[in-house]
Image (tube, rainbow, N blue to C red; front, side, top):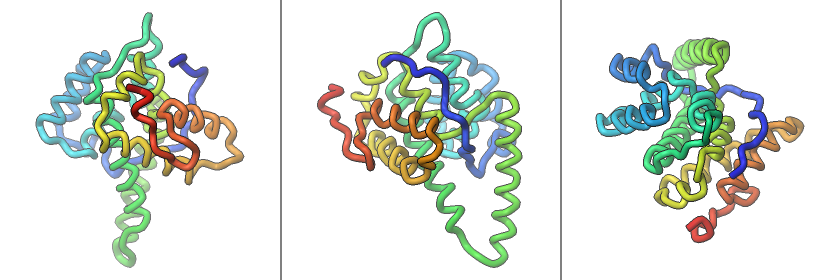
Length: 211
């Protein structure tokens, strides 16, 4: 797939966890994750050690989110492919993060409201700090960056049904949230939908075509 020009204007993708609140081992891991090979090695290490989805999101944020994917896999002398296990797990973790974010919005009432406000404010501050140093954890930007990695369609065909379903659900959710008047992001969403071979409205992916 030919890389798309530019990137989507970011709207914050947040999680209730940040690198500072994750385990010290997760934070330490990021210090060596400066190349795609090191990133995939450290990601799989997190999987083997049973780290939670929030800790994996914190790790992805710490290495640079969509910015790291573009820089490490796309913008070098040659584009690189991503390990299928890592790609699939990334999609599942992103979908779980989006679901948790939605559940927080629909959470309890009364005294719990003040606690959610504190968590939300901290999350927003973390997002501001991340954006200030060029980190994007925007779900659409991450999906867009993933579609530009080398041999994406071949790697996509290797994913499991739950991993593909996670990608489909992310696209469906983004379709329901994006503002039609934001032409740039709508264009990005259409590119992502096409790359994953989803029809408008989150239709089933034709896996046999990618195989």
